[in-house]
Image (cartoon, rainbow, N blue to C red):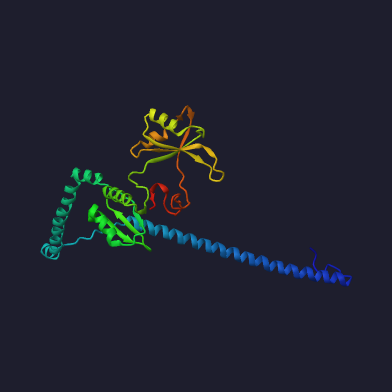
Length: 298
């Protein structure tokens, strides 16, 4: 490029342009020198880093190659015996306790007769309570019970008003008390006995025109111990439905009952009863909480 002496500046604009050009050139040269300095510093830092890394690797190799010297300890056997004597005595006591404690469960576990006895013993449910109403003279009522039934076979409890609840301890006392109350025309009611409760199921898809006695005869011929058959009525319209409630004896096989396929030549579906959430009402005394089957009004 030509020097400033050879360039002839004619106008003011050319003079300004030349000035800007020279300033930019100087600035560019400064930046270039700065970049060169930074490059040289970077090369020095890289070289130092490389030397440091090589030194670290060499130190690691030296550490791995050097094997530590084994440390030898010497113990005094007499001092060790004195210090550990209490530990050895304590361990002997533990062994004696463990031997005695482990011997007892094995003897109990090896006795099969005890397991069979526990399996046979089952808690039998107590009979349902008997509620007697209009008891105006409790002493006479208690004398009537105690003279016909043993005293330790029942317990009485006073309820509201002239009501007495009797809890019998076994089935024999329950039957004796109910029989005694019937003979003396007492006003009482009870509930269904769980021990004598029959097995009840619902037979669906059986026409409502089927007679209950014919259903009982057909199931008896099939080998079932059936007690009763009742046609189910609609709750709102009271119209007969195509389903019957069947009652079997309590010792009947439940799986066998649910395996019934047909009754009177009609294919049926045996299903469990649905429990009602309504409170039962007696049709004899119109009271709630029990049914007419277990009610004996005076």
